[in-house]
Image (tube, rainbow, N blue to C red):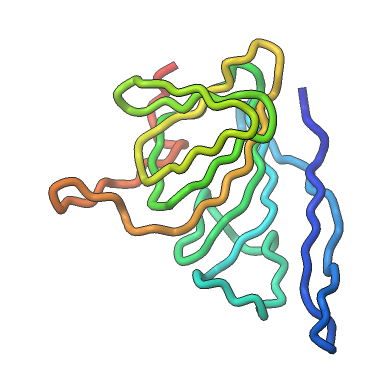
Length: 169
């Protein structure tokens, strides 16, 4: 079941330096190839710290899952019973469960269920997401900040893209 598009309100300044609304629109989701997950790119920045004088609409930047040197905000809708591939990115991710619930699975098989209002701070670890519901779409907001790779004993852990990761379903 598709959830409604997400409203996006972007602020800025007028020529006198007063706060104004630059954009007030809705962002429809785009399906992944399997159609079980839908992504809505809400905003990106190409630097951190952010340049608040950059007039670029953050949705217009070319972006992968993450944006090297920058940040990404996206809404993710996961169909009931769907599961992502195991993956790791060189990013610090804040995941906020907006509705439904989500299981976070780590590479050792451990799972933690997080419900609406819960927050996950993902620090460059191998993980997968699963919607355990049989009938409810889960909606999450993810903020991904570019980060140095996590290391173990001084060795950087490699990124593993969800598209190339083997599924453990």
